[in-house]
Image 1: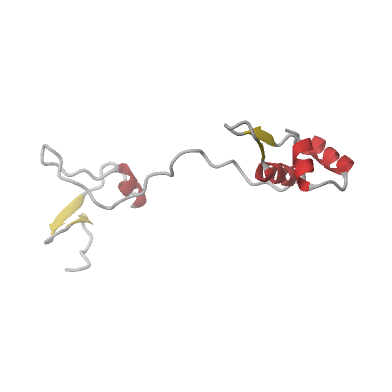
Image 2: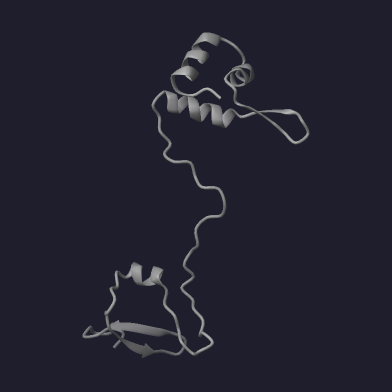
Length: 120
């Protein structure tokens, strides 16, 4: 597959040919499981834009997206509740920060020591 200046030169050299022939001539072709040819138009056009100076940034990583916070937790087997690092990072909490625990019907509120609770 041609990239950069080589790709631009090949496109200019071929001139007025069909898009399929252009993609094929620049090497953006793969073979399917059944042995037929597949033209990779998207990869070709991305490479062409990159050669012309348009940057898309790094390619997205394959696989599933990152985990999302659920804002739920469970009581562990030993009776403890765990608040993960992602939650403490959202609040910019540091080791040693102290809180008062306020119990509600279905919620637990952590109020920083010395701060007034908004709900009284």
